[in-house]
Length: 199
Image 1 (cartoon, rainbow, N blue to C red):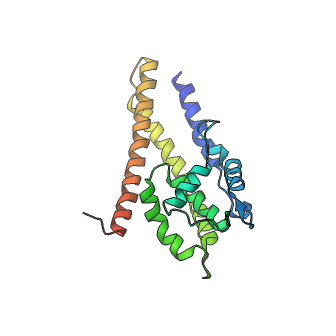
Image 2 (tube, one colour):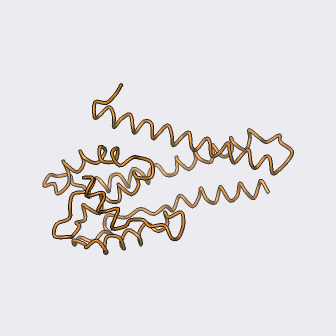
Image 3 (cartoon, rainbow, N blue to C red):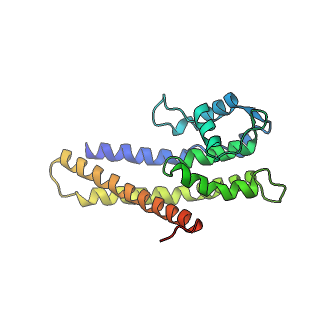
């Protein structure tokens, strides 16, 4: 039973190598209406859903992002490719950051690079970030596999397979959670330091 559990976890970890990224070239270079934006995001990020009936992005969410100044308002009810790129960043950040932290992270990027005439624009930044993330996937997965092995090794001497599985799974979840907590804490400290809120 424990070996089957490990195979399932390893298969899950390996599947993360095929994680979906929205390629900037896939985003239409024409402005889109709200329904087109939500449909596009739904189609391109569906593999990141936890449950089939989860919504990637709704009209209400987009309106709230605009109301909270995370997203510049649309022009004549249409969203540009740059709006789409910001929405993608918001989509990922909202899983672990508060709306105010996301705003503080994105504000300098939006102010300097949204509809920028400079050499560097949001499209370039997004391409660079995707490349960085893709380069980092394998080292992240190796680290997760090390944590799985360590959580298994910690309880290797337990005779009862069900107890071993429960404790190994709990240890694995705790190790991953601590990793997320540390990284989230670092991000929050960077945001606070940028705003001059550092204690």
